[in-house]
Length: 252
Image (tube, rainbow, N blue to C red; front, side, top):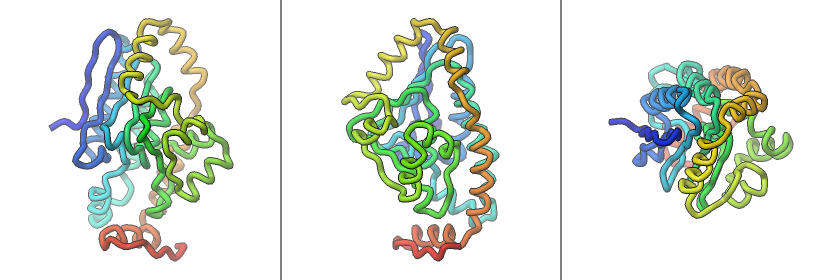
């Protein structure tokens, strides 16, 4: 069963993350399906893209059950290089406007996916959280490059070091989202229709000029994740998750 749906009409490709039972968390199949959808979005008939999640969760990042299984099997963090970064590379390669419609939680790599979009339309119950520090890991998918660019270096450090949860109205005031509306999907479709009827060639050139190399940041993040996957603090975070207790970090 597919966890990603694609709907194409009038030059607009709507990509929906549809894994509600797991709060749209990213397992291997979902990562590969998103990569394929982002590749489809690069076809010349596409003039605008909408990325949607569900009412409770846009995307909550890595599926922790899969992650724990990977660690127990010795697979480590290879999936960051092998699956996450290629998925993000295809998202950043989309040369037409990409609009994220965000309801519910966007966390971890799910927040990174939203940050890579050109516009983020949030619902009133949307929230954003890095989540990585709370489980003893570093950022991935280019968040370390994108977040300070959108807020400020100082604010990015605050959000990441304290792992602060950002609600919709604060996200708007910080510039992390474009708008907060009651129906983000409908608003995203309005914007997509405007772009699909607009000067696509010019928009492609503008997007290329604005684009920065976040893939280099993603590669550096993958190296950090590989080191942290075997750290005492991350092992403690995993154990605490399984035992349903707060982690006791030792700083190693």
